[in-house]
Length: 319
Image (cartoon, helix red, strand yellow):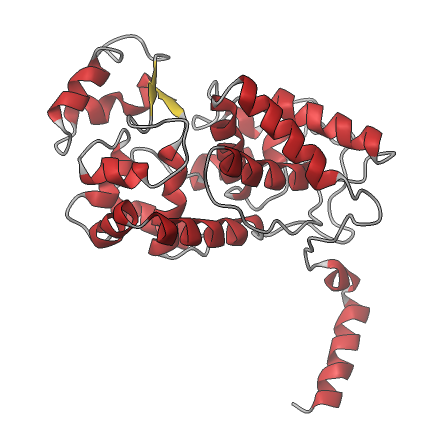
């Protein structure tokens, strides 16, 4: 197609679908309306992590569980405050296991005061906070383009079916991530988010007692905090080596058969991703590059832009 015809087609598409002209996320999106947004989120996340390291893992997990459900639209943050909203917070992977909602509320309030009103979306706040959490805990940085808008409803049904399971086999993980547009390599890289954070006994008990690819000494230590019956809420570090430092230590643990979840150890269990796990365990820079690229890709998953969605005044409820 000639350049002039392409130009006319572009004008026609914008005329028919005006939201296309706003669909591109940009790091400069709030340069005029809220130039301090990046600094406010960074300062807030840093202060929160200095008070409690675990909050960084919670914020990173939040962006995963938001974006994997129809897209990065802050649907995860909505409470059951309308009959039409069935909160994603209630699904099994999220129920009684998420922290950090109050911090997002605080960041939102600070931004709105600084920028004279609700101009920054909750979805954008989640995206920046996830990146800043990784950086504060020693991991890589990446560019976070902005311009997402917030959903007007939650999607509990999709959350129940689409979120990756800690009980999944490798083939199921690859299929789950592929359905969202990720390669197997990107899936393994994103799994490195488990280098930080903790998990409840309920989630890893079956792997701990019935798994066949566990290092005995680490398994014995974990059993002391996660009995075969009871203690469902007892916590254990996902990575036993350095749970508050983001790095390739997660992959080193997998090579040593110390994965906490069945889904973790499946990445290194005689399957197709063993070589990649070994590479990441030895080469932190390659892991960092792949993780950062995959996070940018995740942040671009089906964002609401233009006239779609809204900019919430309160991240927990629609306007």
